[in-house]
Amino acid sequence: MLVVAIALSACASGNSNNDDVDAAVDAPRPCTPPGTEETCNGMDDDCDIIVDEGFPLKDQECSVGMGECAATGTMVCSDDGTGTRCSAVEGTASDETCDGLDNDCDMAIDEGFNVGNGCDGADADSCLDGMTVCDGAGGTRCTDVDGFLPEVCDGIDNDCDENVDEGYTLGAGCDGTDADTCNEGSIVCSADAMSTVCNDANTVNTELCDGLDNDCNGMTDEGYDVGATCTVGLGTCARNGTRVCATSGTAATCTALPGSPLLEICGNGVDEDCTGADAPCPVNDTGAGAIDISAGTGAGLTVDLSSARDDHWDATAGCGAQGGRDLFYTFTLPAPEVVYWDTFGSNFDTVIRVYSGSCTALSSLVSCGSDSCGLLQSQEARELPAGQYCMIVDQQSEAVTAGSLRLNYRRGRRVGPVLPASPIVGDTSDATNQSISSCESQTAQPDEAYYFTTCPGSKQFRADTCSTVGNRDTILYLRAGSAAGTSDVACGDDNCSLESRIGPTTLTGANLWWVIVDGFGTANPGAGVGAYTLTWTLQ
Image (cartoon, rainbow, N blue to C red; front, side, top):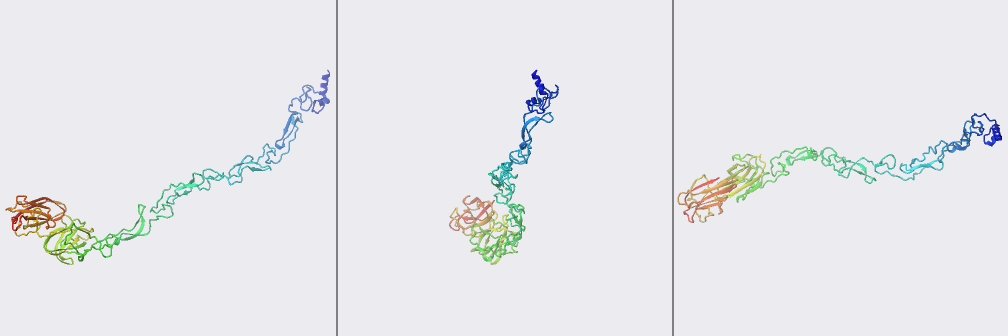
């Protein structure tokens, strides 16, 4: 019974200090009847010999405040006994500084100082190569070591200034290494990113004559002399104009048109035919300079009379018209003979007038010929007496502009009539011996010769004396040009009994021909002298 009495004595004690049980024993307080609720006051309010049960935090370690304001203590009963509280008192907050502490007790450390953020140092770039940290004195510093990142040409913002490839003028127009100065390319980064290049494809824009600056050098139509005074044509055809661009655009032309050329008059210092010079006169442009062709012209004499003057006109001659250019030739016959001339091969319409006498003292008109063999050139053969003659080769009229002359002049070297129509009945009794045949040397008999001409082209000639009546011994031969000499084109002897035949023989080109009837024998008269019948064809 003694233990119960002690407990009740403790419960009855009236001690307000709840620090320990000993104190409760020392100062018991009256015990509340069972069922009273326990409060936190250091007493056994519900008389169960346990003080402040139900408050497990009591006497536990505790803290108050944050950062530098934090304080520690123990949990004690609250003033109203319904709970517990911490016995610590919170410190006073101060301004936040950069020191790794929560100086202002707001649960944030070094706020406002951007600690840990990227930052740029004092280098020339704008790159955040460092981090913001406290400097130990309440402030901050940047850990960037001041390394400089220069901007290069690579499409990246190397210096972090929010500009890409600044300073390189990328995209600007540029000209390559071609011959023009046109900005046909643009500035781009080089392959090593350290510089720039121009991507002009190096095609050359050639300057055209079109009023545009094609090669972009600031000038228009250079090299074409546009607007300059120009001259077209030569001599009397010269006309002045202005240079303008041609339709093609690749050249400039003169606005002037040349005049029409006129008939050239040689030796007057004027370029009438607009060839660039006053042509010298041919040596035989006048009668005083007539060229002597007495010996013949061989294969033909050629000369240009394009610049010759019109020195002669004979309205009574009956051929040609006034105004053509002319040249003078002279020839002398020591005895009567047949002569031949033609102008086949000339490139203009010719007229030939032949006069007796010298070319400076013309006498009577002997011949005037034009348009032979169906052509525009002249041809004639005729027997002329001995003496001097003047041949004037003229153009048909002043309308003729060509002037390349080809003159063929041949001497027949004997007389004889023109070949009459077949058959021919003749007699050599009154003739003389003038030639020897090539196929029979014993023809020292009188002979008769007939001449004829051929036109350009080919003909077949046949002739014979086979129908001759009587016991004649004839020799028949054909010669070209001259009847003299011993060269025969064809020769026949004793082809039909004692009579002769030649052909068919091809005669080529325009020429003078002789068919000669001769007789056999060395004495005169002989068996080869007398009447004969000559038949012939030229087809």
